[in-house]
Image 1 (cartoon, rainbow, N blue to C red):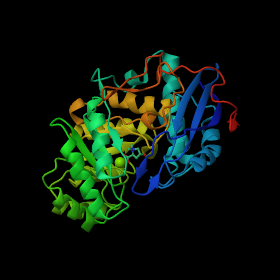
Image 2: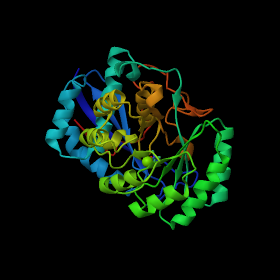
Image 3: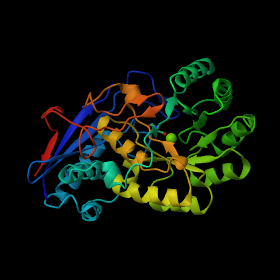
Image 4: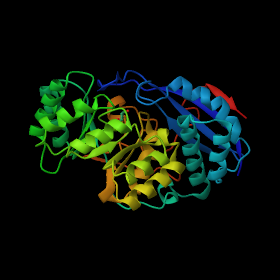
Length: 368
Ligand code: 0XW
Ligand code: MG
């Protein structure tokens, strides 16, 4: 096996329902799909897509620009040699984990196809037949948030992520309390501010909602602020945007700051690095999610595959963007949410997805 060619595609994902976070509203992000082609023509697929330029320090045009350096760096390498693949990318470019993630995921898909095994099996095998997910309730009015939550619980969801921030905290508190009224006993609520509050604001919100069983996901922007909140609040702290690499994850576990993580494959660099982060979190008994910022069936399948290998007691779920754009690249096998759980593609080896030749149109770039 050796990588003969890399093809890059732009795939717009129009948002069908409003999706607002503290620092951005998602419009029509243009996803990056990559094909990593083996010498015998076998194709591995990868994908990354930022919801907005604000969520993490990356944006979709920049991801495709980074591939002009990263793709040539892996040509000729055996895709099975994932350590060599990642070392070549890290030698070629510092940072830019999103472009690296797209290529890394494509290598996992390609390896699975060559070995006729699923990515789930390559990651160590599923520990559960069902894979949890969580659903986002965007920033809005208390009435809308409560109504959206009730509908989601009716549809079988047990994990809700309520977006907050970007406004006066009195509005967030009203939304949290309205959603809390709608929760069932078995519902887990994460209040995700995407770095939007100051430590003082987070502490005030936590105090005002002291009787609500919820976690605070990335309430503030910096690790220092998160420590301040941790010291003064009883609500568990889930770290998302601050979990920038495995060192940060290890630090926030050992310091006792993190009660959980909201992890993104693109931010950590793909499945190879996320496998190590998974093993660290499972060993430390710290719950984690397996998400990405946005994207279609390919990145969703990678998130769900990794999510299947989590110890269910320490899984915060595998989030997918499909409910918000409602597009499938593989109409038959693309991951979808049913009764609050997410389905694992079973269309074949690798990520389990099947694509018609040319289904992503004309490549934006080809590297050979
Ligand atoms: C809910 N997500 C996984 C998707 C959005 O990009 C933000 C992210 C989060 O947890 O913040
Ligand atoms: Mg988050």
